[in-house]
Length: 80
Image (cartoon, rainbow, N blue to C red; front, side, top):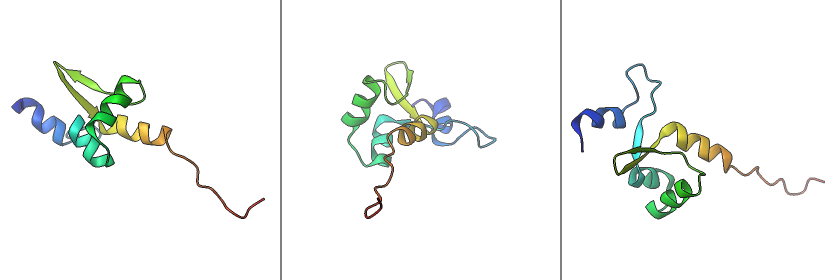
């Protein structure tokens, strides 16, 4: 991995508001899905990504936005 990118990807910007980039494999691990699923969602345009050369990274912000979009409201059984 490129040394100048490693600290940026692991940690947000110094003020704590940066994106913090994750590899496809790290994003998959955090969500409990396969890397294929992450790549498919990126290809479908559902999950944003950053391309640096041939590598693909997902920002924590993109992951949060994706999770908000796919959130399903809870079912309330017994209410009419």
